[in-house]
Image 1 (cartoon, rainbow, N blue to C red):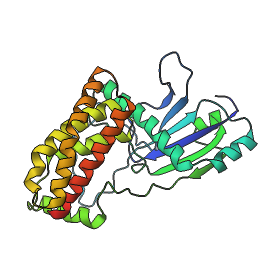
Image 2 (image 1 turned 90 degrees about the horizontal axis):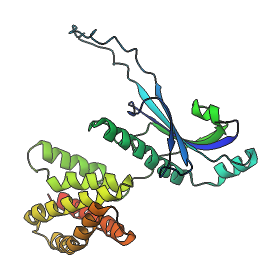
Image 3 (image 1 turned 30 degrees about the vertical axis):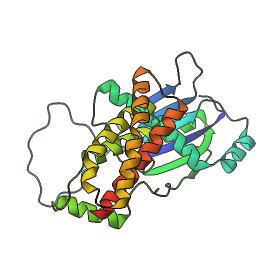
Image 4 (image 1 turned 120 degrees about the vertical axis):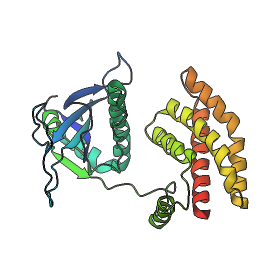
Length: 282
């Protein structure tokens, strides 16, 4: 990176991201020009003891909090801005939330690639909500890579969408689940996984995941069909089955059409709405 000015989005997380600290070139396909550079850093890492030095130690009755390492990821545009005036206009005129959303998808793809490369299912998913702070700005390449900048803005978290439950509703459901008054459904977890895939841009995985989630929902939700609203939602879900089966087959063959992806997202929203209705009536 030169002294030219580059736009960036930066995230800090309360854990290590997984990929080793360093710089990674991000391309859509081999042979294409780089679109972004990902810079991964570790912050506040506690001193690592030598392998084999671990032993059972007496635990203090009032221990201090254990120090933890945090991770920082900076997604840098590969193409420089024309000059500082152009950089100022870019920062002032951009939708910073949208830039952060696009950058978190790219970062999520890199972390997902690390998860696959290491075959480690414990690698956590990154989202804007899981970030301690999100920044968008610009600066010289080497400064940006070192975590510094010329100008930057802190971007607030997006407002919660309708897909989740309110705080009170979530607490009531949690109490019901922990107290044995309600049961967790397989389709709930499968739907959450499908939402994670959709939000991360993993279209093929989303189609396959929603296919399984839909089958599970159509098997589990009829037990809650005592009200007309649930009956109607089950009818809509059943009507989605044929299109979802086609989307899943297309995913196995290599990719979805825009229409199939739209149907996957629509079905996911219907599933989420049905699960909200079930939880509200439980």
